[in-house]
Image 1 (spheres, rainbow, N blue to C red):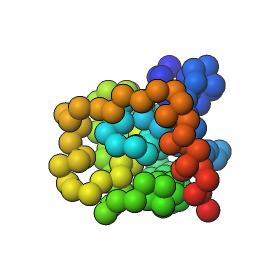
Image 2 (image 1 turned 90 degrees about the horizontal axis):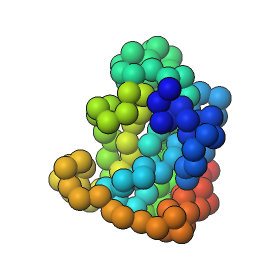
Image 3 (image 1 turned 30 degrees about the horizontal axis):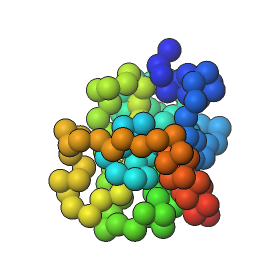
Image 4 (image 1 turned 120 degrees about the horizontal axis):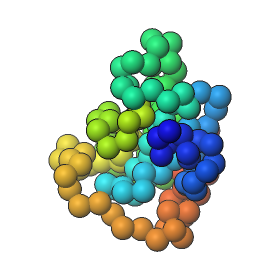
Length: 130
């Protein structure tokens, strides 16, 4: 069972932005930028492109709504999208507010936020969901 499945099952806490029957969005605990959010299918599948075609389409539609809320919450040039999948064996997509392409470099130092700061970031994004 992956750490993401434990979040989905509410066995460990997370700053959840939104969810539906198929996907969940929550803040990355090692963010590159304020608003860095993970989009995760609720079905535990290791490789992103092993998701059925219908779910690949739906995850992007789900992510679009979250990306729009992130951009309203943390003004930026783009919402960078990255699928790496090496750190957790559960398919997931990173949404990161960026102003330059090098800001999506995962070897960069991560932000260190308090639980209160994470909660504030999550509240901002949730308030901008349409």
